[in-house]
Length: 173
Image (tube, rainbow, N blue to C red; front, side, top):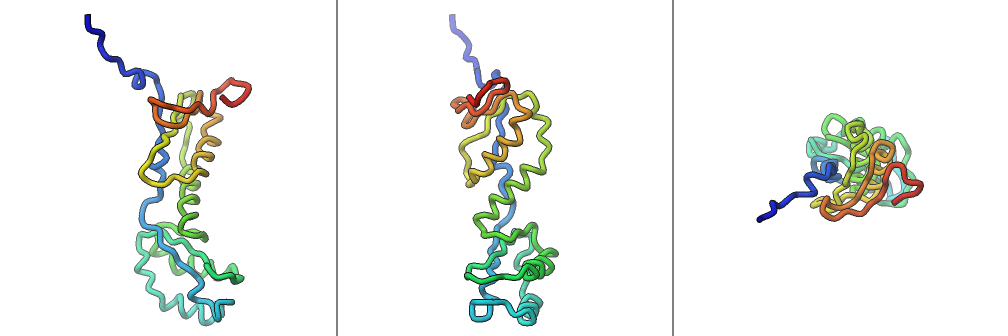
């Protein structure tokens, strides 16, 4: 008598959440204010305004702009505001950060924008493997957001998980 194969993972009621789905769409482009500094020390407002006015903003259409300064200089707040004014009509998103940290900030925005109520009372697996780099902060944030809702939270793949949280336990599992 042959026993049919049973997919215990499919029947377990586990719901997998793939953080890669929250990776920012589009290319992340750096915008370094260093190139606009006078003697790599300071911005001259008149020169900066003129440079921004003449800058080719079209090159950023639909892209994500990471605005930062790689030089050790004090950048006035109005400088970031001016960049935002010129860039806003063209970019998909922008932030005052380095390109690497842009990804982390984008994850935080996306995760906090989502309504997670559909996961209330569910057994969740936060997928561990991805093709795109998911920052550690995203794993922390999704745990923080889901802990009040989920029955349990695990990390990994449904066939091999690491327990992280279980509702009703006095301590973390």
